Amino acid sequence: MLELRIIKGDATSPQAKGPKIIAHVSNDLGGWGKGFVLALSKRWSEPERAFRRWHRERAGNDFGLGATQLVQVQPDLWVANMVGQHGLKAGSGGPPVRYEAIGKCLETVAAHALELGASVHMPRIGCGLSGGKWERIEPMVVASLCERDIPTTVYDFD
Figure 1 (cartoon, rainbow, N blue to C red):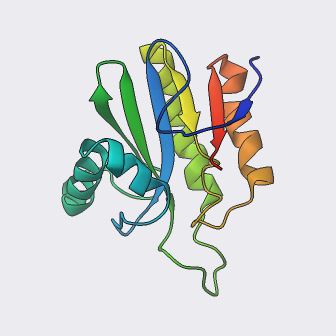
Figure 2 (tube, helix red, strand yellow; figure 1 turned 60 degrees about the horizontal axis):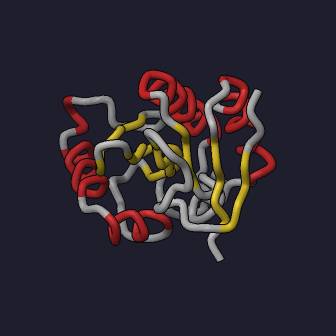
């Protein structure tokens, strides 16, 4: 089992050689405009464009909680748009994070990483605007990725 690596840095600039996947959590309303996605959009237009199209055409695809869309942005780099947040704001049902959906997304990312021979890079997914707790998400990251010997790095941005 590989250890989860947590470093200071920018998850949109993965520190690794070879194929890489940047994983992040998005919402099930098709919104893209706050949080980590802004950093992604500054670097590449493809993830936002693909996410918006995926949401727009959701009647004919798998868009929804627990779904993952892999978008290639460079020859050896992909962005995983993971739908792990229901809505945008906390309400009577608590924060918008959906742990079960994030777990399912991480399983999909793991399958892609194994197929591509890729390492996985992410901010502390589900803990920003989603309102999740890292103590609940970290064990899912470890079980889905690290226990399968997929090199995984979490970036804390200053």
